[in-house]
Image (tube, helix red, strand yellow):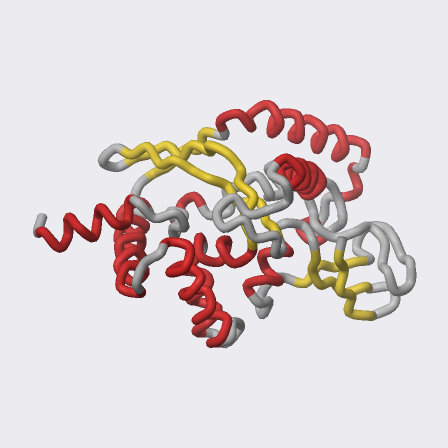
Length: 250
C-alpha cells in the first residue's frame, strides 16, 4: 500500500458521517418492511428513539426531518457473510441521504433531486467531517468497491436484539390473516393491512375496505418523499370509490 493510500484509508476511518451501501442480496431486508416490524411498530420504535435522543440527529444534532437508520455490521468470509443489525439510529434527512449516496446520486441523475440539493449534501458531508471534496470522492469510490465485492456473496441476516420483536410481529400478522381470510388476493401487496403504509380510510370520500385504496409506488418520488414513504410517514394512493388521487400523511 502506498503512502497516499495509507493516508486516505486513515482519513476514511475517522469519518463521522459515512456512506453506507447495502449489499444487493440484502436489499429489502429491513425492519420497516411488511415482513418485518411493519409500519405501526416501526413508527413506535422510531418515535421512542427520537424522544430518547432529545429529538436530534445522532450525527450532526440537527432536528430537521428525523428518520430511523439501521446500523449494520458485515461479518464476512470468502464467499458468504452475516449481516448483523446493531441498532437503529435517529438521523436527519441530510445525513440519511449521505448514508444512501448511491440512491441519492441515481435520483440526481434522473432529475428527481436538484443540483442545489445535491451540492448541498456534498457540502454537508465536508462540513460534518471537516474535510475536502477529495475525501468525499475517495470515500464514495471505496464504498462502491466494497459494495461490489459484498454483493457477490451469499448473506444471512442476524437481527440481533430485534429478534423477539420480529417474532412477535410475525405471530400477530398470522393471527390477523387468520381472522381475515378474504384479504389475500392478487392485489394484496397494495391492500391496507398490518405492515402496509396507507391509512384504512380514504380522506376524500371516507371509503374503507380492501381494494378501495390502491397504493401508488415510489417511482417518480424525490429522495425525501421516498424516505418518508419508507418510514411510513406519507405516500400516494388511488381511491377506487371516488376515483381520486390521494396524498396521505401521518
